[in-house]
Image 1 (tube, rainbow, N blue to C red):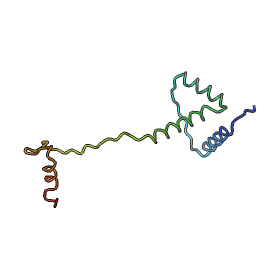
Image 2: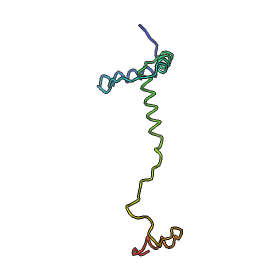
Image 3: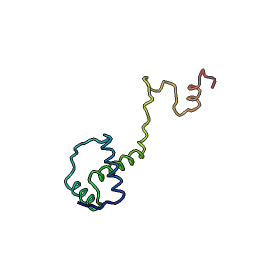
Image 4: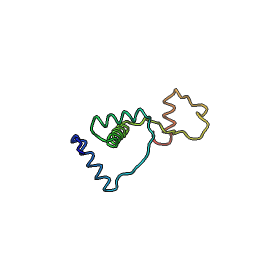
Length: 107
């Protein structure tokens, strides 16, 4: 049986075969919606590639996209145990706060 492949597909298949020979592949099972699998099969057939190559390239693309997406900034909780603002401190008075911060530190 002779099949026609694009150069890109042929290279992927050779890389996959080499990875299998080197023992760098694993077999797994996933559950997919039937419609998604049917669409993947049609796409693979139209592009003259395998489902495996299609899944692999899609998974790689998704992982790369997620790696480039920065995680949202999360400020670590820097609070400590205590009873809140001490009596006599006015949080609107920055001169008072600054002098308390640097008290005994040469500021």
